[in-house]
Amino acid sequence: MLPVLLFIGVTVDGFVGQCYIFAAIERMHSRAPQPIVSSDETKASGGHTAARTTEGSPSDSLSGKRACGSSSVVERLLAKEKVAGSIPVCRSKKFPASVGSFLLYTSAMLSRFLATLTIIGLYLVAGVTTFLMYVDLARAPVFFEHFTPSDDKPVAIIAPTATLTFVGDIMLAREVEKAIITNGVDWPFSAIDTTWADSDLVIGNFESTVRDAYRYEGEVLAFDTTPGAILGLKNAGFTHLSLANNHGDDFGSDVTAYTRGVIANLGIVPFGDPAASKDFVARAEPNGIPVSLIGFHAFIESPASILETIRTEHDADRFVIVFPHWGNEYQLTPSVAQTDAAQMFVDAGADLIVGAHPHVIEPIASLDGTPVAYSLGNFIFDQDWSAATKEGLLLTVTITDDAVTITPTPVTVTNRQPTVMTGNRVQEILDFIGVPTGSVTFSRE
Image (cartoon, rainbow, N blue to C red):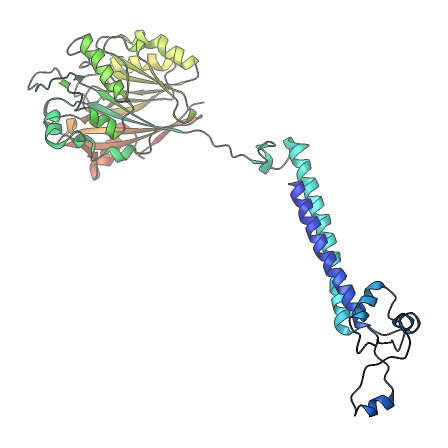
C-alpha cells in the first residue's frame, strides 16, 4: 500500500508543479513590453500604429531599455513577438500584471499548497497503516484482526457448517419394484429429491438386498431388488445407506456382501451390517466437519457391541452418529430397550441418534443434551393399509462447531412416492414428536 500512496503523491506533485510553471510564464508574458511609437509615425500611417523600436541591435534594446525581467524565459517570449524585425521596449520598470494572470498565479499557488497538504496526508495514512499491519496487530482495529501480511488483505473467518438429511425405511422390492419397472428408476424419488438439494450428505435405511434376477416376493417377507432398480438412489442424491437391518441378510452373508458391492459401485457409501456393524463404519468430512456413521441392528447385535467403536470415533474428535434399527413395529412410542440402548450410546460419546424399523413415526427426545430421533417411519414402502405407515419424517440436521439443529419435515407416502406433507396434519405431527416450532437446537459444548 505504501508504494501506491507514494506514487500517487509524486504524480499529483508533478502535475501541480507543471501548472505552477505555466502560470508563472503566463504572468511574465502579461508584463511583456509595449512598443514606443512616435506621433509622427502614427500620423504617417493614417492613424494605424506601425510597431517599431528605436535603433540599435536587439541585444542593446533588451539590455538597456527593458524592465520586465532579464530571464531567458522572457527573452524567448519577446523573441516570438518581433514585429517587422523590431523588438518592443518597456515603457516602465514597474509594469503591472493583468488581473487574469494574477488570478491564475494565485490559483496555481493555492493548488500547490493543497497538493502539499494532500501528499502529507497520504504519507500519514501510509505510516499509520503500516504501523497497524506490522507493528502491533494485537491492538489493531477489528478490521485487521485476521490480517495476514502475505495476503495483504483481511481474511473473513467463517465457521464450517455441515447439512445432513436422514430418511426412514427404503424398500425397493415388492410393489415398489413393480412401480419402478412401470414408471422408471427415478419414479419413487421424483416428487421429493429437490428437498435435500443443499445437503452435504443424504442418508437412508436400505431395507432390501440386491440380486441380479428379478423376483416378485408377494407375501414373502424376504426382500430383494435388482442393480438397475436401485440406480434411482444414486440419481436422487443419496450418499450413504445403512445395511444394519433385519432384511440385509434375507439371503445370507454372500448376498449381503454383493449388495454392499453394488451400492458402493454406484458411488454410495454403505455402512453398518446385519451382524457386525462395528466393522463397517462410514467416515466423511462435509465442509471440514469430521462425521462418523455407525449402524446398529438390535435384533442380532447387542448395544455393547458398538460402544467401543463409538468411543474410538468420539476420542478422534469426530461427530458420532448412531443409526440403529430397533424398536417394535407399528408402536408410536419407544420401547424400554430403545431408551436404554440410546442412553448407553450417549454415555459412550454419540452426538446424534437416528432410528428406524417401527415403520411409524416416534418422538424426538434429548438425552443429556444429545438429540435422539427414535423412528423416522417409512420413506419408500408399500404399506398402504394404515395412515401411520404412510407417514414419515425427513430429518435435516445442521452441524456447526458448537451446535446441532434438528429440522423434521413430515412426508406422505402415496402411490410408492414420498411427498412433503401439507395441511393441518403437519403441525399435529410436529406437536407429537416434540418439535412444535419446526426445529430445535442442541448445544455441543
